[in-house]
Every structure is written in C-alpha cells, then in structure tokens.
Amino acid sequence: MIWEVLKIKQLRKIVEIDQEKCDGCGLCAEGCHEKAIEIVDGKARLISESYCDGLGDCLPACPQDAINIVTREAEPFDEEAVQARIQGSCPSASPCSVAAPSSSPSSSALSQWPIQIHLVPPRAEYFQNAELLIAADCTAFAAPSLQKGLMENRITLIGCPKLDDIQAYLDKLTVIFRDNNIKHIRVLRMSVPCCGGIVGFVEKALERAGKNIPREILILGIDGQIQERKGA
Image (cartoon, rainbow, N blue to C red; front, side, top):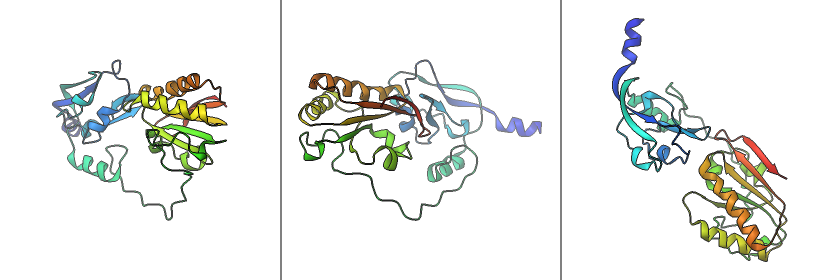
C-alpha cells in the first residue's frame, strides 16, 4: 500500500492558479490542450493533476497573470487519461465512456436569423411587439433548458461581452430599443465576472433609447442551473 501511494506522487512541474487574481474569464481553459482547467464557481481550477503536463500552454492566455508553473509533488501526467477525456469529455481522471447521441433532436426554438447582435438588422419586422432573449453566447453550452425553456417564443440575440466590440453592441441595441415596440427583455449570462458586461450594455442602451422596458436578468452556473433571477 505504501509503495502504491509513493508511486502516485512525484516531484514535477505543474500549473498553479492564483484564485485571488483569477477573474474567471475562461481563456486559460480554452488555451489548455489537455482540458485540465475548468471554470468552477467563477474561478479557473485545475480539475486533475494527472491532466496537467506542466508545459504551461495556458500561461500566455491569462490576462490577469494568475497562472504559474511550480515544482511540487503531484500525480504523474497521464496522457492516456487526457486522450480519453478529450475524446469522451470525461469529467474526471477516472475512466469513462462516450455517451451515445440522443435518438432524434427536437426542432430548434429559433424564430429568426441571424442572431448575432452585430448582424441583426435593427429595424427588422420581427422586432415589433417582440420579447427578446439577449444572451452571452457561452450560455448556449451550459443551459440544457435554453431551447425550450428560455429561448422559446423570443427573438434571440447573442454576443460576448468580454471579446466583442461593446460600443457597436451598444449602438445596435439602442436603435432596436428606440425604434421598435419591445415588450420584454430577458438577459442571460454566466456567473463568471467577465459575463456581467452584457447586463451593463443592455441597461445603457435602454437609457440611451429613453425606454424602460420590463426585463429580467438570469445568471447561470456552469452546471446550467439558474443561480440568480432578477426582475420579472
């Protein structure tokens, strides 16, 4: 038993994430080829030592300088487990199997196209008397209820408040709110800090348009569950 424990740990280089500096933007998780990093409760976390090769591909992706490579005792890098995770989306270092696809996908709840804020025509007929869903684009990958629960019977607009041209979004939404009879706005964002900007530019666009449209703010965790609901 002692031999087995000693075999698990070895002195090697591994990622260390400063939780105080991390703002949960998720860029390090995108930069990690081994998928060793995930955003948990709004912060980047190393989900398994055995997934991290210690080479630091995630370092240049972090805008907060929150990641370092340290040398300490850690589980050995397990390339086989990493490949299984990449191919089968394993949630941990334990063996897993790839889930079979569902038999028949339901129809989409989209009622218009395009949906990217930059691309929608601001005076399109479908905006008249419409209820809107304005969503951070990453929410589509977290919310299992998006299609039939949150998006149904709404005009959908998506954008990224972290990486996109926010001024252009502000200008476009101002025109949409000002020149159309919008009945209700639902704003959908993730719980990570970088996602909060989508609420800010919706509120600013309403102010610029001189409108006070009924609205609600929904905040999702990475498990896809609604953590907080504001407004109605």
